[in-house]
Length: 72
Image 1 (cartoon, rainbow, N blue to C red):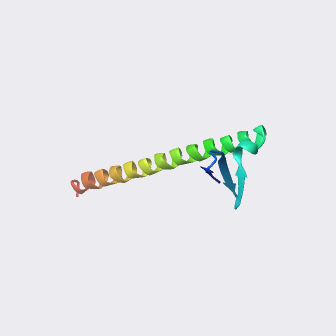
Image 2: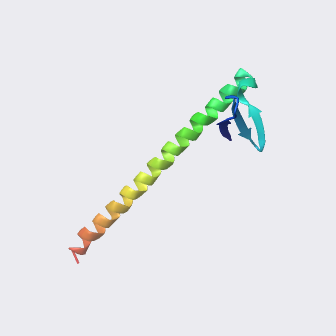
Image 3: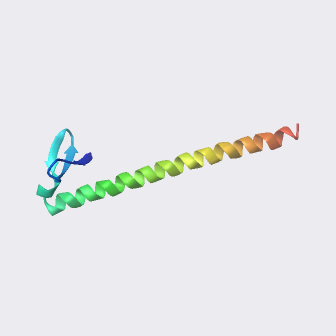
């Protein structure tokens, strides 16, 4: 799903290879589009959070490895 604006300023939804003029869609469909946009935003946020957690975990593993070297 992607959204862009054509020359007339009417946003266009591209969904499964078809283009739809958003201003011509029903309120119910527009609400579904908004819900999908929110879900996409949330997914990106959580993916970014997972990346940060993974980096932090790697750093903690490296720190533990260094500390345990001193015991050998």
